[in-house]
Image 1: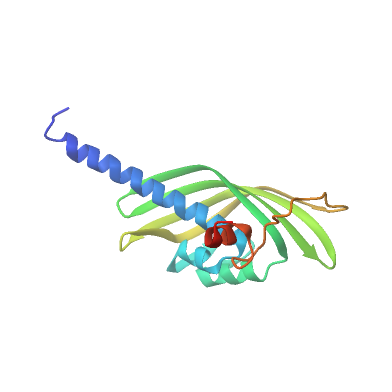
Image 2: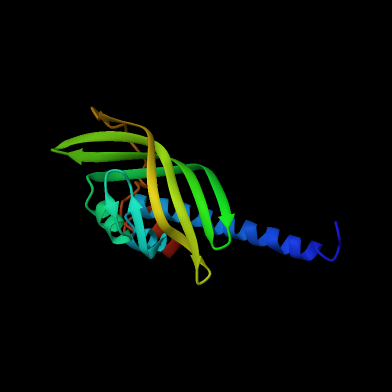
Amino acid sequence: MNDQHAPTDRDALLQQLLDREAIREVMTRYCRGVDRRDDDLIRAAYHPDAFDDHGNFTGSREAVVTKVRNSTVTASMHHIGNVDIELDGDVAWVETYFVAYASHEIDGRTYDSARGGRYLDRFERRDGRWAVARRKVADDWAHMDEVVRRPEVGVHQGQRSPDADPWYTFRRTGA
């Protein structure tokens, strides 16, 4: 390797690592936003003119916020796994595997669901910020079961609200 080119190559590799980490952060914060019904985190994952085809709904980032806010989901937890990021300048093609667990209240009954799939995203870096410009969700599997009885859980119950969830309280107060 020619030493004259090493810093440039290293700088390019470092920028790729920073870009990939920024995209991963967008994905994890999006998941927290959905799980906690944090409208600001959901919005921040998308560019203002983004389009989302979630399979069971399509629309703008505001449509995503509205869908999450008005859903039958009473609790949820998203886990993301493999994140394949193909960088191409200020565009990145990103495939993120996910498993989402949710509890639903439907017609007075409680159901738990699990869904496995992939977020297929076109990310764009605009004004130095990576966010989703276009999303399509590919479903690989899903199931839903009626809950007969819930086991006892701890006292720090997760909430679908940034005002009440233990994470937000912990961040504000340290306790």
